[in-house]
Image (cartoon, rainbow, N blue to C red):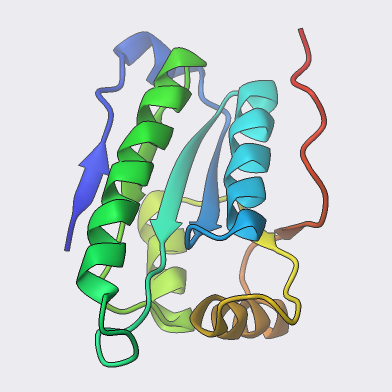
Length: 153
């Protein structure tokens, strides 16, 4: 299970006010989710945890290649967050379920989750997770529909 983390500075940790989880599967909708999470984190001085979702190995012949590409994308988000002065971490677990997300929420002290709006073009594994979270989640969900507003100066 790839786990990626940018080095956090003690000064950054001392001023953090929250923890945001963003759902990411490489789709345009989840790219917006991550962008929203990074901008929100910058405004409220929060850390960001990006949960990478990729197709189950039995559903896509190229799932391993998709996962490798996703790890590269998550590394790029970690570096982008660092340039914004944020503590960003990411992980691509082998399986993601409502229960595993609840464990991430508890273990990482997540205050809110940023998810994409589910539509007809959503990836099925991401849509299923978002629908489950909408039914019952222990923290507030932010649903992204549009491009994030520009970052405040």
